[in-house]
Every structure is written in structure tokens, then in C-alpha cells.
Image (cartoon, rainbow, N blue to C red; front, side, top):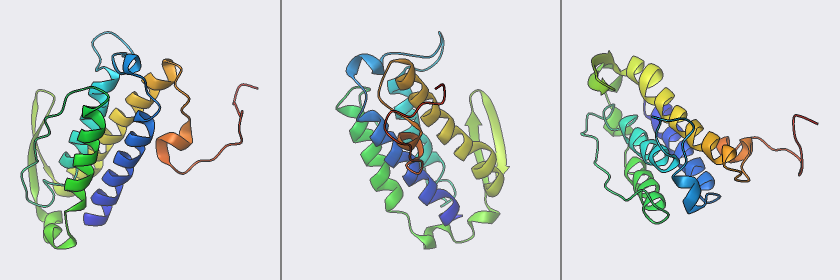
Length: 163
């Protein structure tokens, strides 16, 4: 459970910082549709879900992050989440696969096995919110691409799928 959660959370946080570096303050207030989180709220939620995807599996309370949703607070929140996740050890996850995780998903109260919690709730939500931040930045004209999102892809300069 350590390997399936910590490294994934750290990768998402790394890429959130890459994306955030290409944002402007005005982009942070944008949202894809009415009623959705702003870009800034998406980034804060990435930080929160990195903690939610790891700490409950380690049998620990999820640390609270309290940072403003601005150009100074967002990198601090993401970096703080990186440090907190990075402090977890393999030993913290002893017996984690047998844990039951009780949590909220929106207004739903759920109890899931640790593997189901990680695979069907925590990681999908972590990547969903990172995807939404990415989509908002793209919509707002930020120079971001898939390589910025996952840190793995590479494309030649000027490449586009619609050529």
C-alpha cells in the first residue's frame, strides 16, 4: 500500500507544482463551469487528496492544510503536502491492506477496505482534481501540455493533434 499510494501522491504533487508555475493570478479564479471549483480550489484539493490517499492507509489522521488560494499560498500548500507525504515510511503502512477506511465522499458516508478506498476513491479523486486544474489552465491559455500533467510524455515544440 505504501508503494501504491506515496509515490503516486508525490508524482501528482510534483506535477501540480509544474502546472501552477505556468498559471497567472487571473487563471486561478477561473472555473470550467458554474458550480465547479476554481482552478485555485482544484490545486488545494490536490494537496488535500495527496494526504487523504496516504495518511488513512497509514492509520493516521489526515493533516489539515490551511493556506490561502493565491500565488503564494498554493505552492506552499502543495509543498507542505509533499513534505508530509514524504515523511511517511514503509513501516507506517504495516497491516494497511486490512484496514477499513471510514470517510466522506461529498455528502456520502462510506466505509471501504483500504485497497478499495485507494483504488476507487482516493487516487481517482487526486487525479480528477489535477485534471481539472490542468483543463482550466488549458482553457485559459496557459502553455501547458500532457508532459506538464504527467511528467512522462514528450512532444516536439509546436506539436498539435489538430494539424
